[in-house]
Amino acid sequence: MTSTRYDGDTWDLASSVGTTATAAAAARAIATRTDRRLIDDPFAEPLVRAVGIDLLTGLATGEVPPGDLVEQVWIDVAKVRTKFYDEFFLAATSAGITQVVILASGLDSRAYRLPWPAGTVVYELDKPEVIEFKTRTLAELGAAPTADRRVAAVDLRDDWPAVLRAAGFDPARPTAWSAEGLLGYLPPEAQDRLLDTITELSAPASRVATESKPNPQPGDEEKTKQRLDRMSDQWRENNFDPGMARVRYYGERNEAAPYLTDHGWILNGVTIRDLLAANNLPPVNDDDIHLGEVVYVSAALRRGPSAGNRPS
Image (cartoon, rainbow, N blue to C red; front, side, top):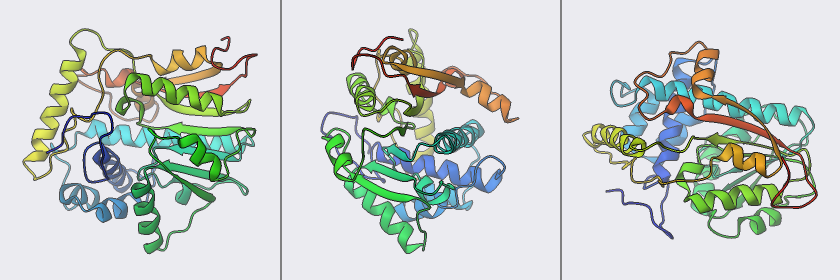
């Protein structure tokens, strides 16, 4: 049984919030199998299989059809989200940024599958057991990184900047950062600290990509919990209880897009609704949880005269 999040809780890729990384990889595996024009993640399926959650393995390999277990919209979102972040990194490195940081990297395989320019250093940051699992599993598959991959094995609740620096990170060089699918799993104050720290560690011309979700209207969060509970109920019938509504943090928080703008970042944003349309995918129907309104943000830093409160 998945318990509600609390300060100091623990998890791995088969428990609590860690299962969200495995479920996301399963969605990428399904998307890769069905639509390689938008996504090609050959490592998603074997990584899910190695985690060992039977239902997710069946979905990733195609032995279990998605049916009602995974709504098509979530598979389509996996396609456009993966494409968005892939294109963000390739654009940043093509513009001359040679330092990349993937926060809460989970089962992300971009260090192994993207065509990084020569000289690119990719830092993957996640809990030690997650980093060790992925590194070992991909090595056993015979996979080799396509960049200079360096790991920062640390929990985001600890002093991760120190571990990142120890791995060779240089805050004087422009960096391309990603916080993909992460912010909603942080308490509101931790989200702000993370974005503040990214800003503090970023040289001018650095870039960042993340999601920005509008703050909920009255009743919205209850609808979200109900929809996630319905999904979890279906999965529980197949001997897997992800407790999807219990691994998130709720309540008012600063929206990431305006928060970054206030801290000196110049933003571009596109909604999930518009990304689906741009890629000729079906729209979000019955969107009671406002999924289509989530904005994927890419931003470049314009360094102001003082840290922490830069002019827009």
